[in-house]
Image (tube, rainbow, N blue to C red; front, side, top):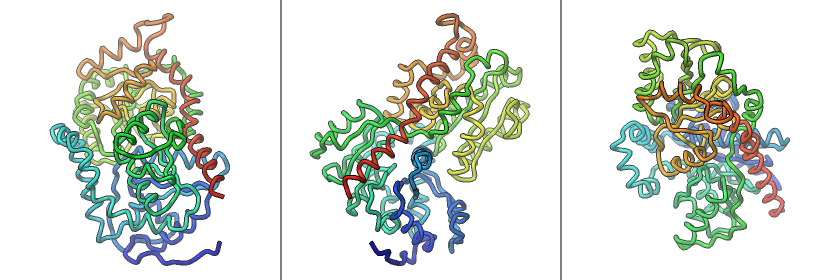
Length: 445
């Protein structure tokens, strides 16, 4: 097939780069698309193009980035050529206010419980009317315009646009929960799905039928959760007993939108005495959020807790904040997952699955929605997760760490043992998705 040189729309940011990525996406074996965040500095380093307009980076979701990245890591390990794009990087200056509005609305809701209740009531209507869809349509359509292989999509907005453009799509359902937007194009034979488990598969088929779509079960495959395959090696090195002779290591984390801020602040306040007396050490993960960095810094100052350098694994308190979603994700993989015994986190499709895949236990904060309630229930049933008790967090941690509950072992030790057993299975999700995409590609030849 001859390579054409259709120029990129002139109003796109990184127009020349978009043209180059258009050709990359059509030539690789594993093309991946997500809608998660911008990482313009990374794009500039890769292709050398400096954007004409100065627009700030935005983050909608760490999960949609980390899962997409997990797939490209798996593809590389399988010696398949790959490329991943997020069309948000290319949105024109004229359309940029739509992107900023979407991010700002998400951040405000994430920090305000009353607004979250309103959001829950209006969720489907709001999601169907987000201006982000209109903003990414043109760059996504251009960069994927010549792709003939199945495209792995990590966001339903991208998947729906791609199918409407006539592309073959493997849509990853990124939680054990099905939103109506996933089945918008379920009638199309070009749309297939990868889901975490059998329960989600049944839910997807049920919702498609209820909403009047024809979706054969052969187009829905259970693959597991796409977590970074590198976590399996971290789990193998995990000691399930080291915490007996040193401070218990807790990673206290937020998500892509900066959720659970008030809950995290209160929990840290109650943990302060344990951090100071050496019973607990904390890695505070701010994601890409300046207000979390300020909160963590203020906490350390007010409680006279020394803030250690990122590389100091013996420090009682460290803060991790990325410059963009790529940097933030790598900070977790380099510094936090290998170090922590357990994660204090909302039970999300990224952090919760990744923590368990790294051999850690979970102390869960308030779920953000029904999908996270499903995740919490799943890991509680697996015996690796328990709900954080807020103001009683200190006696709770003491009990979980020292009170024998089975075979003279504490809950913490048992939970980490169970997580290590589960880790190899969890780490296969991304590889399973690549194998499924390659199987689909063979049917198109």
